[in-house]
Image (cartoon, rainbow, N blue to C red):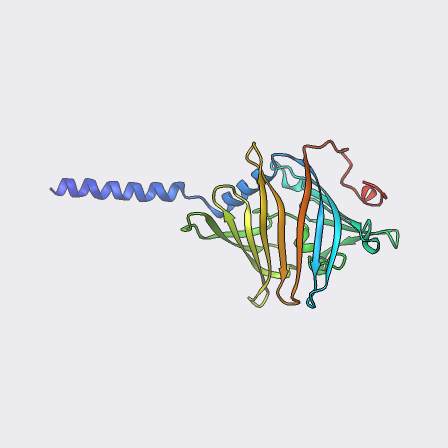
Length: 257
């Protein structure tokens, strides 16, 4: 009988250690999210942004985005974000390179490019409620100290992400990740005082045959100034041919890209 009890005990211990060994980590979740988004390295997206201020006034802007994402080397990640209309913001363009370490803003009215660095990343981009920090890069394990807060939910992982950047506006991000498709459903941005400041929610995605995920619609709220932005992509082209020097300061100064 004692032998049977001991055998049963050893089986329980083995199963417990096995489950711990195979449990996914926060860094592995972020890696998988990057892998799912980088299966098609180059991408062009055309869409709209509808901004609503605290008084309920709406403004619609047309936009185009080009991106390059290489899961083998996040330092090569880059994207260009340009407004196409209305006239007062036409061709205002942001360039992010080296996973958000280098950010440039082109203002056509001044015909000059400005480097955005340090505390400048806290500024809002072209009158939107997105800061340059919000737009500058992805969510890699190199940029955040990630902790898995909860995986008991059948559908989602909950991650706690503490920025490595000492100049960040946020003490942490709370990210809800889809367990099956590995994309973020929601991100809560927590300010330096520990209060919820902004919320980004993904409302529509498209799953490709290769398993990659394309975000088509998202809703961004700034809870402090009571403003919102609804971003929706109307067309997405993947695997497009782009020149090797496309993501450059020279490119964003062109009237057409």
